[in-house]
Every structure is written in C-alpha cells, then in structure tokens.
Image 1 (cartoon, rainbow, N blue to C red):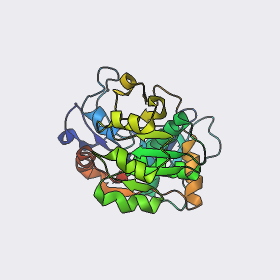
Image 2 (image 1 turned 45 degrees about the horizontal axis):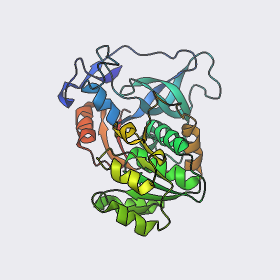
Image 3 (image 1 turned 90 degrees about the vertical axis):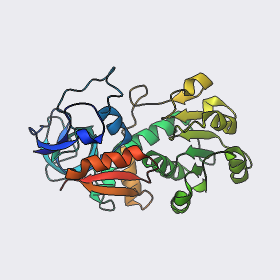
Length: 302
C-alpha cells in the first residue's frame, strides 16, 4: 500500500510516500480503506523526535492517528460495524491507503470524509477536558484557542451541554466563532477586562488549548487554578492548574458517537483549514507546524 513515511526524525522534508505492507485488524479493531486522514500537532511533534525519550519509534514510521474510510476488514469481537460501513476513528499509522482503527463509530452522512477524519482526537480531547472541569448547564466556559480543532470541538460540546462559551481567537476567526454560537474575543493583553465585559458574573471554568503563555491570567480570570485545565501548557501544575492527556487521564472515546449524533442533528460541524493529497504530506505538516490553524488539516487519500 502507499503510505506517507519517514525513516528518521526531522523536519517535514523527511516525509516520503513509499510502498509499505498492509496492516490487518486484530481483536476489537477494524481496518479501513482510508478516504481522508487528519494531520494533528502531535504528529509533527512525534516526527521531530520530541517524544523519543519516552516513546521511541520503529522506522519506517507512518504518521497520523485519525482517519475516515470504508471498513474492509473486521477483527474478532467487533460488534455494530460490518465490512462496507463508512466509519471514522483513531488508531495508528493513518496516513496511508489502509489503516487499523482501535476506536471508531459510523460516519453520519452530514459529515464529509474530510470532516469526519478531523473528529477523533479533537473530540476525545475536548470531551475529556470538559469532564475534568465538570461544568453544568447555565455555567460559563472560557476556551483559550477556540478556533482550532480541539477548541471548536470543545465549544460545540459545551454549547450542546447548555453552557455559555467565550472563546479567544485571532481577528480573522472572530466571525467563525460567532457562527458556532461562541462569544468571541481576541488573544493577548487585556484579556481579563475583555472577558469581564462578556461575562460580568465571571467564568466557571477555563480550557486552555493554546499554551500561549497566558496561563497566569487565565487562572486569575477563573479565580481558582482548580477551574483551569490545559492540554498545551505543561507548567500548569506549578500554578495549581491541571494538564490532561489521554495517557494521564481516562480517555473519552464516547466523544466519537456523541459528535456523530450531534452532527446528525445539525449541531456539530468541523471546519477544514486545508486539504492536501497524500503526496503533499510534507506541506500538510508544514502547515500544521506554522500554527494559527482554523479547524483541521486533512490528507485526501482516495
């Protein structure tokens, strides 16, 4: 099969499309013929060797974990999904013609292949962080970095939960946040004052997806470091706030069918920042590393 691969750590130039052996589904897994695969920031961080000390790769490596496609192989113990079903989910080595998924759900027709491929990591991360914050309907959430894949997923879940959502983003993404139902504001100095104008009674929780160095101000806005969860600022515990990852907290894979159902109801969508063919995988990784992404970056495989 054709796959995006690299044989050593490095910048995007190490990526090449090569022929690789096909994977096969094991217990509880499905294999899909991939239509689209998402490029997430974790993919280029792994490619650059930032996790080599704890999770060294075996080369050649195929990046990516999130994909959508048609099931063509079902492993033992799989229920509710059959060969020929259209699904999306997460697994490993997704930037290829075939990928094995560990967690998956049926793709609703309301989502394109590209949109569905961008859901798994963003929705799992968003739902896990919201679970840690434990907010209730009628309360207010501030999302730092609300226009990205995880931020916009968290915003839509929170709105569906009955929360009021304030989100930060750059100038060009203010209208996008409004279209989701988010009260938008900009990054940077004076955030506390801007949030106070949008939420005179204060906010009940803060979800930091950006890691832009604003954590002390976010804690001040929340009024309690215990009300702040970050996925991007690893200094958070020094301030009494919390960092969450799927390795440190219970994953929230129930987010996948939840997002699919909300999409069927017209209450969840996925913005696509950019699309690239598999052969342009290096350019897709460059785009991800550049930051300021609205929504998801996607590789179109077939």
